Image (cartoon, rainbow over all chains, first blue to last red; front, side, top):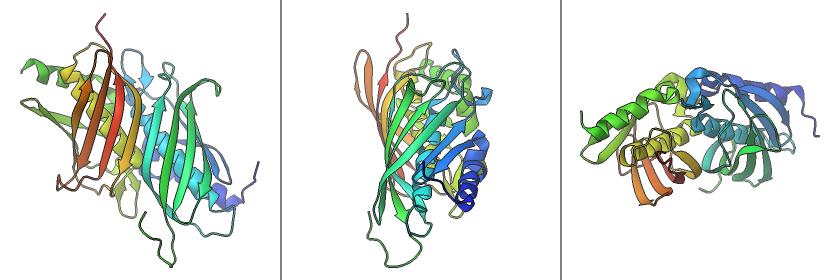
Length: 155
Length: 138
């Protein structure tokens, strides 16, 4: 466990709940550590993707995984000396192991395992009830938009 | 309404998440175009502003599923096996469009490519490649 200062916790809370799409989906921050983050997407009737089984949509899982990966990258900036930066997804690969259980929300946890000057590499997992029984895994690369020169070469 | 148009309408109407996104789709012959009007709740970056990367991925995946609902009709929703989303440029506060290309449709599995654009189709903002498990009528 790498404790983060209250300002990072505040940034994470802000990111998980006030970004318009995150707020619209009702995201809740579960935890944040250096280079790691976890967010929950609660089940809701209007977010169902399979009406027959009342299962939360794969689209919500995509957004949750993307958002949690972004959180892991943002929080990794606070582990070293680097200043905060904005990020954009370059690519995101998702494998769906199974559908979520009926009327269950989804939790995702992401780990930014490598951060270069320009790129952050992230892995994430999503589950509904039991962490050892995943519904999806993700692998992503994000481009970092650092605030100050020297300008990073295009990814 | 033709049978394919009806299947498409059924898919769009019965999935609540499609309404959450505010997504529509139109059929012209055998070509389907998905349409996502801009809405403030879809934003992921308020400074640009730009659509959330997850919304883009969801729009592309739902386009693939909608297209499959037309060509592989089933009373059940087809299942996504895996997807890779490539982000090419920010998606601005404009209407987005997407079209799916069914690269291979086998007995159980379909390989689908999807591309999305806004004002200029030759300038796509995102693309998806994915595999889908087809739900057969039983």
